[in-house]
Image (cartoon, rainbow, N blue to C red; front, top):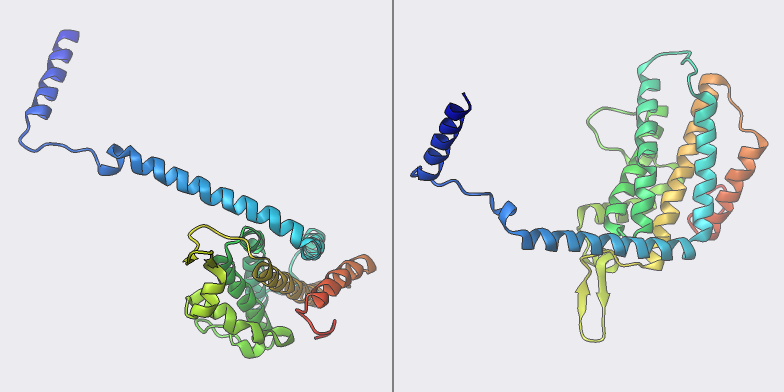
Length: 259
C-alpha cells in the first residue's frame, strides 16, 4: 500500500518538473531584499511617530489636559445613559445616535495622528469631525437630507472659518498649506518629508481644533440627553468642561468662552 502511494507521488513530481509550462514563484516571495527594505521603512516611520508623540505631549500639555477632561466627561455621560431605553423612536433620534457614534469612534485615531505628526491625515479626520457637528446641527434644525454634504452654514460657534483650510488639507489642493505641513528646509536644500516630522505650531493648532470639536460634541450630547431623559449637567461636569474651555480660549480657538 505504501509502495503504491510513493510511486504515485513520484509520478506526480515527475510530471510537475517535466511540464512544458514552468511554475514560477511570485516575485514578492523571492525578492527578500524588498521585504527587508519595506520592514525597515515601516520601522523608521513608527520610530518617527514615537518621537513626534513624545515631543507633542511635552509641548501640548495644556491641550492634552483639556482633551482628557472632555473625554472623561464624555465617558461619564455614556456610562450614565448606557442601557437606557429610548423613550421615542424616530428617524431624527436614530440619525443623531449614528453621527455621534461615528464621531466618538474616531476620536483617538484623530488625536494620535496629530500627536504623531501625521498632519495631513489628521486634517482629513478633523474635517470629518467638523462635518459630524454640522450634520448634528442640521438634524436638530430639521434641515438634514441624505446624500448631500454638510452645509457649513450650520456650523456651531462660527466654526466655518476653519473649514476652508481643512478642505485644502483633505484635498491636497493648496501647495502653501501642504508645504507647511510636510516640507522642511535644510542648509543645503528644501525637501518634503516622507516620514512624519514634528511641528509645534501646526500640531498645536490642529490639536486645539480637535479638542474644540470634542467640546462641540459634548454640547450636542448634553442637549440630546436633556431632550431624551431630562438630564442636567452637574457641577463636577461643568467645572471640568469650563477648565477645558478656558484652555481653548487661551489657545485662541475661541475669542471668549461663548464665542
